[in-house]
Amino acid sequence: MALHLRPTDPAGSAARDVILARLAATYGAALGRFFERRVKVPADVADLVQDVFLRLSRMRDPATIEKPEHFLFVTAANVLKDRARRDHVRGGGLHDELIGDDVAGSEIPPDRVLESREAADRLQAVLLELPERTRDVFVLRVLEGLKMADVAHALGISTRAAEKHQAKALARVTLALEDWRHR
Image (cartoon, rainbow, N blue to C red; front, top):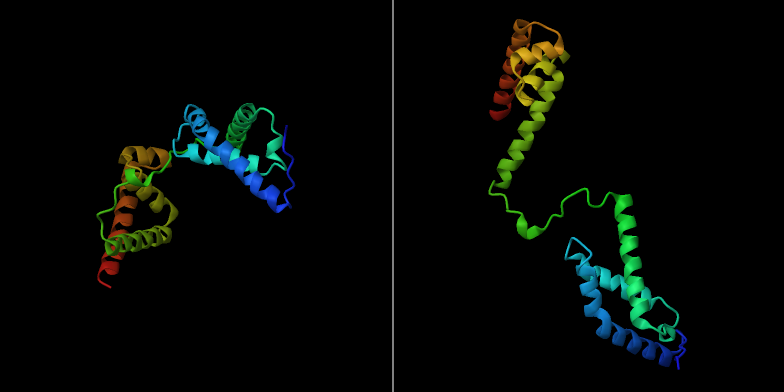
């Protein structure tokens, strides 16, 4: 005999909570094992189990479930399908999980980090002030690591012209960074 509960009835609410707690105690571990075999990230298991019971708690009357084990595992499969669909839409799986314990702290003091950022900003500003061809030579040679002959070939200029642009860029960058350091 199924017990029918009304959510607005306080006695029904208490009985409903008892049913939900009993189902969680009975099937929670089994659902956890179900998800452990099917997900890559172990930390997701507890969330998935919780999603199953959240769906169950939204039911008007969970006492009407005739085969709770079957119902819960079908719901679990649907939770996995929904998660996979959501991850696909959001591009899930296209990145590595960042777990705090695996990330070593930086030993670089914050003031050095700030100083480096300011130097990078200054370098960017100087590069933007350079003529386009000179900037292209500098970027390809210094930042991309191309050989001077390859830079010249890529830009359709002679190696000697590329070297002159490189010298001009290095002089401007060096001067700007020295001025910035002595501020």
